[in-house]
Amino acid sequence: MLLPHQQSQSSTPQASFSLVSADTRIPQEEPTSNAGQVQESPTESASSRETWPNVEAMLAKKMENDNAEHSVVHRLCNADKISLRDIARERVDIISEKMHRLPDEFLEELKTELRVILDGNGGSQHREEIFLLQKLVQSRTDLTDKTLLIANRAQLEILVAINTGIQAFLHPNITLPQNTLIEIFVYKRCRNIACQNQLPADDCTCELCSKRNGFCNLCMCVICNKFDFEVNTCRWIGCDLCSHWTHTDCAIRDGQICMGSSGKSGTGQSEMLFRCQACHRTSELLGWVKDVFQHCAPAWDMEALTRELDYVSRIFRGSEDLRGRKLFRNCEDLKEKMKSGVVDSSMACRTILGFFQELELDSPRSMENGEGGRLVAPQEACSRIADVVQEAIRKMEIVADEKKRRFKKARMDVEAFEHEVEDKTREAAELKLEKQRKKLQIEELEKIVRLKLAEADMFQLKANEAKREADRLQMIALAKSEKSEEDFASSYLKQRLKEAEAEKQYLLEKIKLQESFRSPSSGGADQS
Image 1 (tube, helix red, strand yellow):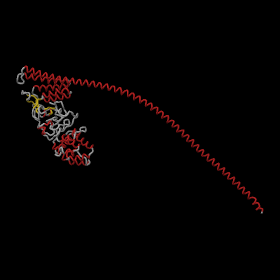
Image 2 (image 1 turned 120 degrees about the vertical axis):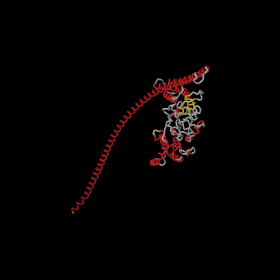
Image 3 (image 1 turned 180 degrees about the horizontal axis):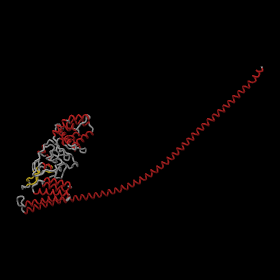
Image 4 (image 1 turned 180 degrees about the vertical axis):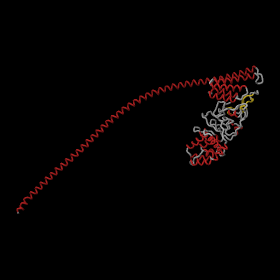
């Protein structure tokens, strides 16, 4: 019998998604009382523990204030902007046309807002909002695979996230084809991103797979209709006959684990059985727990082993047969020893596996002593004991081979690590030499820079001296120019003075000459 999700895709996201019940229209069965046999689990399954307020009353309360709230929104926002309620309520083509006109940043804000609501950190307000959105979406009849073909991608992701209650569809690193999103919305494909099988899975024709929308028998719990990413664990119980899976906590809570007579033993002896809600047939639990521990326990750490022992204790708490009571007591003792630090995980693993081998050896012995209602011949008992011993030896050889393989792998990892350390040491030495070379180059460059600075200072000093000399020569030239101008003016004035003197002398001589010509003529006149 395979463990859950081993039948689904091999690539499982290493992330934990917040889940909200996807199908609020499916009525939940009332848990049957089994207080006399099995005590209810102290902690229910993580994917099965949500309790929500009444959807109808919440919807009525929200619709009363709807008009007032949206009038405020329209006053604050532009006419083209839309809200999550608009997407959940309006026609696909109208919203798609509006979203094509909106920027990508606004669409991302819408998806971020829905992720915050699905996170559930806002308390009852967020829970009421998501259930209102789910009520709006699931009450529509126009959301078919044909109408969703014209939807905007962001619009389709938001509708699928609202309908399934899974925020992973809004994650920026997860991109699914549009036809896959449509099939998930119309319940034709599993909403588990790690599974994504066509529904009904494996063409199952049982009543659950045929009538429960979105149910996948490969990865979902028959009772709570939810899934998680736990594998190789006693957290899930599988039916031997129909291969449907159930959370251990859900089975304990609904009374699906109880005492009964197994049809396989043929002895009529009572033991702990699991009653599958899908096919209503029973499977024995002791052999299932033994197989899980023998195949998976060597890989568990302390925390995982403690958790699995706790699951086994809760399963066999109400057991009335001898082997079940022994298993319950051993699990409780191991938990106390591990909690106090008396034994480690490897020792506890060997102890519980040895206990299962003792149970196998005790089985034929009890049959021989008449527990089965008849005496067994010594040869038959010896052959059974030999078979059990051979089986135990075979399983011990398997465990030894596994440990040998892990030892070889660890040895190879150590060698690879040593090689890597040598490479890193060599690279570190090379980097150190390179650093020294760079340091010498930097010192050389600093010397060159200091020399160039000194040369620059010298040239600046010479330039300042040259400037001062030029200023002095300019002043001398200016002084000489002024003096030459003064000399020129002086010589010019002297020349003009000489010319004036000469002209004056000339005029005086001319006057004298005229006077000399006038003197004889004036003497005769006087005499006359």
